[in-house]
Image 1 (cartoon, helix red, strand yellow):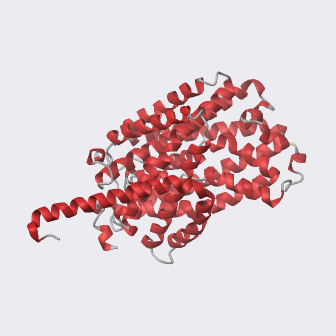
Image 2 (image 1 turned 120 degrees about the vertical axis):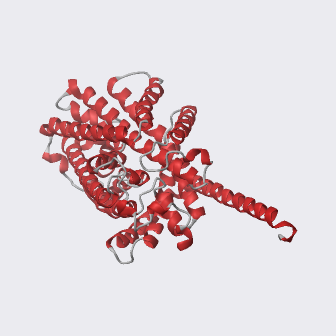
Image 3 (image 1 turned 90 degrees about the vertical axis):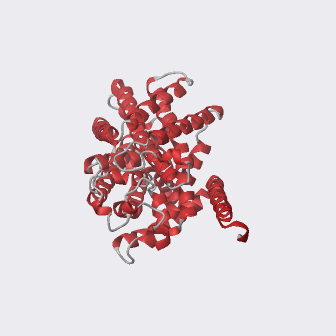
Length: 446
């Protein structure tokens, strides 16, 4: 492992992680980043979809996935607290599994998971149009408009985007609480019977849906170096986020089942249907604001992560060195952010060309994320102290991630292509190094 340690900046070694304190992100801003990254756009549709496949039993699925997400969130928190670096999972993998594996992890997140950025924008725009009305072509226009604020805020660094994130997360929690309070009087106890209306198979299907709702813990690892006290702040922020996300999803699921009952899965905009039961006139406003806040929050968190990762990949030689500016804590990776903007618009154009069919793009996003999780958890097993709490969380997460890979199935083709690209870069670098060595040693080179 010592050879791998030589290939990463000395400032991220475990002995110095606790002393990295030049960042601006505190516990509250960190919690907001986690909350927005994990809640995601799933809050707009998943409560209704889960109720449709599992009925009242969908409540059990939320509890199950919340419990299952704890090992994954805890493992990433332990790694980020000990190795705070812009490379995030790629850095953890570089330390434990070597440069090529780290390059794969970096490419999966930067090029693969990034496919989800325009998907989130289109989902938010679609919800807005469904809530307030408008032609289909306006979805693309609104999606572009939703992308602008997160890019602008991240261009000014985490001092600005972190404060924005705190405001967005706070607004989201307040608004969702308002939705629950407004619609709760329409609850009917009869809607909870029969509780397992679709059997345990339905609960299992709902768990599969909510697995993706509780993903996103890896995103904040890329800005771990921006925390003022990573050793203290990251685990605390993670714990707060787990609690908030769990309470939000569980409360919303309970309310959805209690108020809508069998009607929960019949609407493409279940939140609008929920609010309309008691406040039809205000329903559109509530839902439009939620859609905008959720979308902006997710994009603000992920775009900053993509930009920081791109800068670290440039620093480590996995992308052109031009990307490297902004990899250090406290600096802004504007070059990398500009490339992320180009990638996002390119993927958005592909979405439009595909008739705004989100399914293939979501599969690319989730399969790449599953691949990142897999190597990240393997890295954690090697990096964390054996038999410590973090190590046991990593071992448990490895088992859970194996299930995610099995679910991904044929969708793993895209991560395989990106892995092949990373391997090709390794071979080119080795050949270039060999050629330079031969040039310096003369005819004796073999």
